[in-house]
Image (cartoon, rainbow, N blue to C red; front, side, top):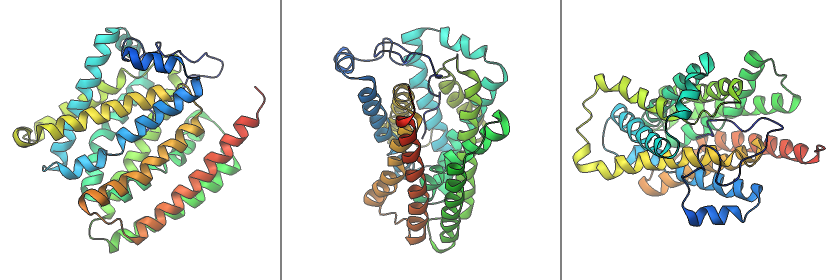
Length: 326
């Protein structure tokens, strides 16, 4: 899971705790008072960390809900989209949605790609191990760098090229291990790569819309994915006995999406990326502890290679950012 709306462009003031599309009217008074007493940086670290912790159980919910992956994907999209939509309408009305409608083709690309990632994630987890999925997702900065070069004309520095080489090697190790793990499968690995690329593509598209908050586009994307899945499934099957899990799944993802999007407005992209790496560590451990899904030695080795490369890369980027003149 990533921040899906992008950080504010350089030179723009960061919003205060009660401002912005997710802050205005949505935070309980006690939390608003607490955030007001914190620095922007501390605020961003706290909010982003909470967002990561909420997204960690995502794959565990997929394992616990007894239904076909495509049915889980429907309910995940429906509940998450409905919760975020309801909160946004209560807090802001329709203004944010009208702004997204004026975003043109970049907004349409963003909605389409995010809509694909919702069922794509569930299908990936349903067809391979959780460890493989989250380790592959951790490689998202590599796809983002390539897309930024191709579509935005941004150069790829030596640090990013070296990171890409090591990450690709780590993904190769993960793919190799899929043939030796009863839970893992190359089919799920390929879906995970596609979802990872789609997330990166969405983040690239949204960079052309810096003046528009794309948060209202998120529930549109989730709900559209659910609508497109509906004709192919019988969604009522798992509801009666498992509605707490289905509703809890959507609530966790809605909270994670909102917190990650809000937190990224207060801290630098390298700091966000470092915190999000926590999911790649904690999610496989949580599923292993809860349902006994052993990631396998090759997934652990490949994941360690990927995470180590990204960790070093993000730390170098953060160090350079702090040394740069303000």
